[in-house]
Image 1: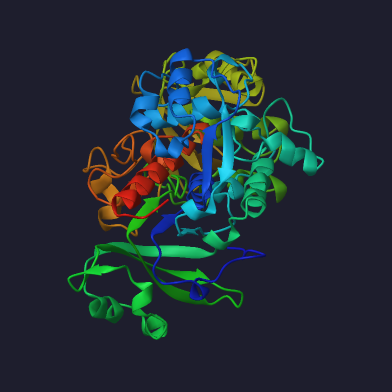
Image 2: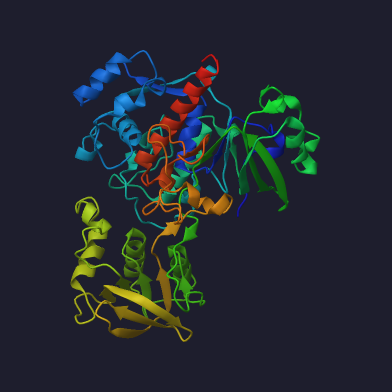
Length: 499
């Protein structure tokens, strides 16, 4: 993992912090922005196109949205997210965006430093999370302005960088640079700690002496009672203990141990590739990322004369791989379990004019089969599943009708989705899901949360946001930041903290 040019060392920080955010992608970044004291107010003269919502906003015009009743404000809103606060925040930032209107945000942001809540954002790499590993020239699914975070319009940032965003969509590299700059421009650097790996998060409720005893010897000498939370009757409040290590400049790993009353999971779901679980999947020519394909092309391991590359999957990542092969004139065999008429296919949800490249792939999927030659260098096998991979670079497919096909391939790309790595939680976090018997999955089994506070239903003072709760698009994951900040602020007010 490359080290950051600038990074905060955990050893320089207090061992206790009110909020620890695990994950430094757009979810964690947006939450850090609000926790740092930035507050959204109804902008002077702003008129929301939804008259009912506009009237509600007028009622609380002199209060920040954070301090208002989010359930009341979001009542009756509809859109592409199932989370009411996500719909609310998106509607305030991009009114009527689903109807392709380009109305300005009705919010005005004010920095009120006295309302900030101390926090730490832990990330494996630079701010932006998984966007830094999304390489290539493909464009984002979302419109570029849907990718931006509060307080910094992407077009303003791109103008300052002398960049031209294409077709209202941007490249992943463009977005990754924007997110990295966002933290600096908004003055959030002190909250971000890079090059960290969290290894355990556990609940702890001990007196102060026992808390000290649990710390690594290397940091015990630094702790004082002032660094622990206020106590009642000699007992510390219930705390979360967050352990891990940080990579520093000389390549060594320095362990850390933090204590926090609140933990936020904002890791995203891109850490672990989904696997088929078939024979031969671990053979050296089988890969689970599109970057492996790009690397093979760059290193001339596959080319126009190679056997076909097998691409498994019917999602957008698989489509990106097909497009990558097309641009390099590399033969592709594309197989997927679904029917091309399946209404759940993502291509059916994308407007043709806005996403012509994906509809080009879908057109191939629909019209090409192993019995025709409509598209050179492309053959599809819909409604087929992988039986096994064989050492001599062969793959055995089985159709829903029961027939088998043996394929000669140069490499295989299994692109069927990803899972979050929650190994630092007990049961890998399964107990937090809607179905505790299954792994956490953004589509099939998201973390079960309160829809207005984003607090996990199974754990108090433990929050989830972003893809972990089913909000996969940046435009909607920002709602988690609003809900969590509102929840924490209201709880602190109940404790007598004066904001």
